[in-house]
Length: 246
Image (cartoon, rainbow, N blue to C red; front, side, top):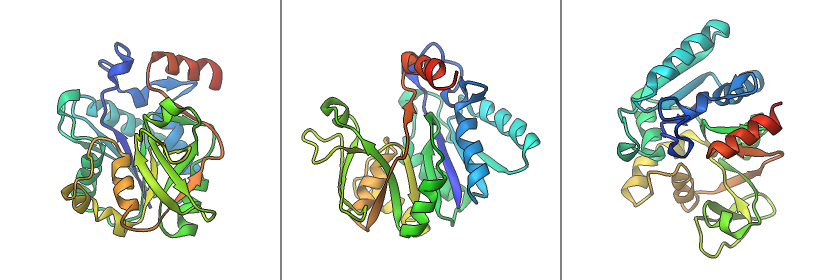
């Protein structure tokens, strides 16, 4: 399995902090956000390569991060430049995934995730869950506030964790399970990204492909065993620093 980490966004809500520096490399405690995610997976899974998908504006920061990282621990990290330099010209998460898959000719199952979230649990259990189910899978967590439900993806599942409905930003949610940007995809499903885009799949939000795919093939959902801290603005960043990693 390989891990694709989406870091090509511009984090405009964190300006001026991220106007000239990438959000995933902001420090939380003694390490960057990206370090927390990668180190966990290196220690607990059999992932043999990390692919970091950056925009052109910040790609050198990630190249420098990779070069420093592999000197300490010799595992494979590949950094891809998606060629964009502004928020207005960004490709979108799904097209960034497609770019990485095609450019590197990836023929592996993939763990795909955003690089700007901090977790208080290991992702290894999610990877194990996906292998056990032998389907493409998403993570989920309970979200009981309607306004927040309307700003994210909401799914319903049966007693065997099989996804029974998947809606992006529903006005009237059918359930209360929200989907954060962490996905395990089987290689045969990854190959369907172009088909999805040709059939109206949204290309900006990373969950758009999962929503489309859930209507094509069985998918399962893993209930998060802990908390996810989404660093969307300066207040949420300061909260994570001061409360979670003291």
